[in-house]
Image 1 (tube, rainbow, N blue to C red):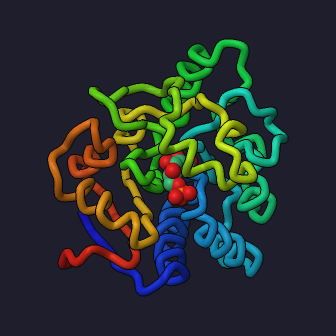
Image 2: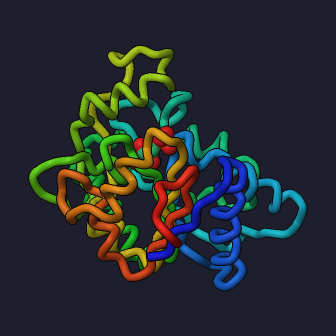
Length: 242
Ligand code: F6R
């Protein structure tokens, strides 16, 4: 595990963007696992800027997002598809046909979850998976529980997660969908490399528990301790030596 402590959000974003860019330089047809949420916005801005300058090219890349809400139309402003269009896809040269998210409106969400795992396998697996960290230790929408759920699945979102995401729905927790489709723990852990980005003093305690506490489904991100190639870029950090 490598932990990089950044001085501020901008520096965190730039360092993480450099890691993603180097992945693309080394393998232009990389399968990139992408995340939504507020943390990666600065990373996506940086990647978009480098693409605009001609320093980075996504033309041969493929992306698979971690998760999507159930029951929001794809063009709803808060769907993760809309988020990705707005914050990244519209500003880079990734082929839209190669930008994958789970379909949160599939007639059978469980079948859609199985299809998504099949897709990731068909693509040859994820080369680099970008992750944010939930306040409760979730990764993707793998919420704390009694057991790790291995495959992509439909999840009932916890009150804590819906509360945290209410800010995107005008502060109205009732407007936050109650279910989502998320990559499972095995799908995430199968990625060749994982890049975890964590920003904000209020997340440093859960980050420390994830990286140094017991590996437990009560802190889903703690499973990342077992990954063979994990890089954490965080700020302000929690005092651990790099
Ligand atoms: C998003 C996702 C979530 C977020 C996490 C942190 O696709 O899977 O796990 O990464 O909730 O969200 P922010 O960055 O908004 O604090």
